[in-house]
Structures are given as C-alpha cells and as structure tokens.
Amino acid sequence: MCAQALVLSGRQIRLEPLESTYVDGLAAAAASDRALYQWSPVPHGRDEAARYVETALGWRDASTAVPFAIVRAADGVVIGSTRFWNIERWAWPPGHARHGRQAPDACEIGYTWLDRSAIRSAANTEAKWLMLAHAFDTWQVLRVCFHTDARNARSRAALERIGAQYEGLLRAHRLAADYSARDSLRFSIVAVEWPQVRQRLQQLLQWE
Image 1 (cartoon, rainbow, N blue to C red):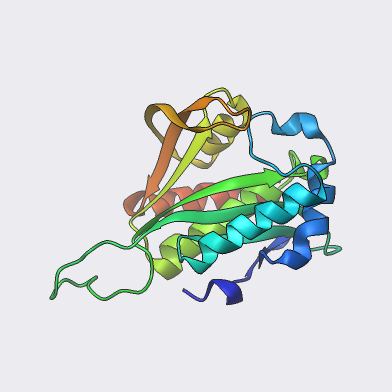
Image 2: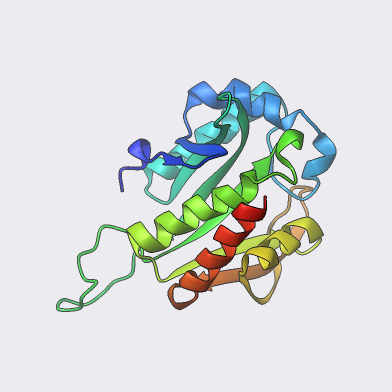
C-alpha cells in the first residue's frame, strides 16, 4: 500500500504521511480551541500528541491505517490530522477479478480534526475529496464508511453535506472522547454513488 509514500495534494491543503516530526505541529493545532473537540479524540499537549502519533504509526505498520497530517499548502503549517483506517481486504476466491489485489476493498475515513483557523474553510471538504478520490479511483474500493458521535451535530451535518448516506445508529459502539460508551451514527459511500459524490464535492470546492 506504500503508506509512507502517499502524499495527497490539493489547492488549499496537503495530506502528508504522519510521522513523529509532526508532534509539535499537532500539539499546537489542537491547542487552538479546545472547545471544538468535545466529541473528537484530539491530543492535548505534546505528550498526548506523541502518543497519538505513536498509536497511528503502529496501526500503519500493521497495515490497518494510513494516517496523515493536514498541512496548509500556503505556509506549510499543520492544521490537523485525518486517516484511512479499518482497512479491509476481502477473501476473493481464485478466478475472481479482484482475487490477489493488494489494495483495500473497503475502508473508513476518520480521526479527522482541524484547528480553529480551518473551521468553515475549504480544508475539510478538500481533505474528503482527496481521500475519497484516492480510495475509489486508485484503490478502487467498494465502500468508504464514516462513524461519528451521535451527539456531534457538526460532524453529522458535514457528512450529509458531501452526500454520505446515513445507515443507522450503533449503540455503545466505541469509547467516546469523554470516556463514555459512545453511540455512533454510521454513514457510507459505495462505489456506485461515487460519481455523484465526486460531482458534489467539486461543486462545493468551487463555492468555497
């Protein structure tokens, strides 16, 4: 999958492979407005940022995640993080057209957060555009899913805005940022829907 080499570049941002060199930048970005992250697992301080990166790199090395630092293209400042994760490779039988693939068959996009300066900018939309285009056009996945805390109205609105389809509520699904048993809202985009979502994202980026 060559996670270490994967850089996704847009007009406003670059998604650069997450490494320990980004610890200070992540800590600074997360300190911009702590109130933004009530429902999101975001590192607080340098020590937590170091552990955050260490965990993400462990998942990368296990081939279950591809984590990124979100970098502002204009000045190279780190403004957040995101990742592909829950990467799935299905057991296609011999003779099937997808048998022997190295690329994922499905994945999740998550652990996405941005600093205060990037909220209501094109950064989140462009990050989703870059990642979804890579997932569907390069990896040729069949599904990309998203989960968000049921209490996170801003995240739900953002997913609905790009055209992700709501699938339902998962009760006591994951550990929440406040260390409660989180109810999650599940959204997804499947391959047949990608052309319409791609057009929607292109329109949004033109407006932003």
